Image (cartoon, rainbow over all chains, first blue to last red; front, side, top):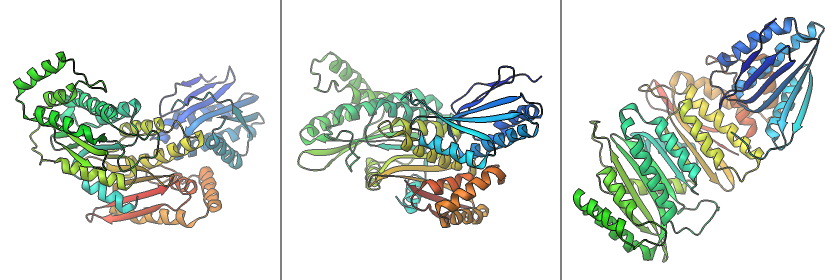
Length: 133
Length: 362
């Protein structure tokens, strides 16, 4: 089976944790990478393999405090890949998390939910006041 | 701020390798970011000046904080708000400060500066020791050592001037000049009058921050950080919105601008006018790209929010691969987040490239 895919987050790129054994699938942090295609390429490659033979239930978490417009398209591409899971007869749910008061992340989530075809839940978590940009 | 303003500033600072100006309230985080910004953007040939320049920036900055007789606190900037600028012209770096001081202090400051400007190196060292051991420490904690240090470090004079504002206050301008002895590129003198002229224009256009230079990702980071650090009293939503704009606009310069002499040069201005933020950018763009960019701008400007949302969502799913690989979402996003239209102008410079300026308000 596929190895976990782990990337630490940086000032400009999100952290990635994909681990099918643990059932953890998460993209979190900030995505303002200048070369989104290059950054997201290995992520798609891992997911392309995964969606062909996924776990019976996949909960995929986005916790993006901020993403630029070129990353928006990449986030959408990830979601469209996840739509493949349904074709295998397995279940997939997207959880979109945003910090309390962060209307922008909330709105971005609602917009992506609108254009996605997945079971998509938007969750608020309490603000820790300090924003670490 | 108009598109014309952007072009004018760009031309005014045309010979500057890098320039950065800031107006408003001063905090240590602004200082930290300003020094980082300048350090990151110094050409290799000037790298030996880095530490000295940082030192001089800190001295100048603290001088503003120490000597400024400014009654306003946390208010919107006024024409006489504290002002700070660093610019590089040829082989000289200039650190410029301007702040209000009480008229009755003007003679003292003038005497001190006139004195340090006339002393020889040896006399300066003697004077330094004299002041060090002198008990006459001024009220604000400085001992007058700052000016001496500036002259010792730069081995150059400190041009200064006072402009009377009213019966109580004057604007005090000072310019520190640091020359790179290893670079043979004798620059024309930049007088304190230039500094006064720039400060006046920046203030009258209600600009809070201006940065002209090469826009790489390295340069964008500190600008974003600085803006963010100065937004703490704002709501998270507004912070996010401003941050979002800046990322899109600055990355646009670093991605799409025309490479001239190996640099992607641009100018970035941020201002506050009538309670609203104004952001302006300017950069060169290949003339061959002008028509398609203009068409895109006109398109998003002609659409209402509903149409923009529709187009955004369509592109989100279907993508729209442009030659640079971006999805074309940036402009749509900019248009739907601003209340007004995006204002832009293309000014032909040569057959090969034009100057592209853009302003948005929010």
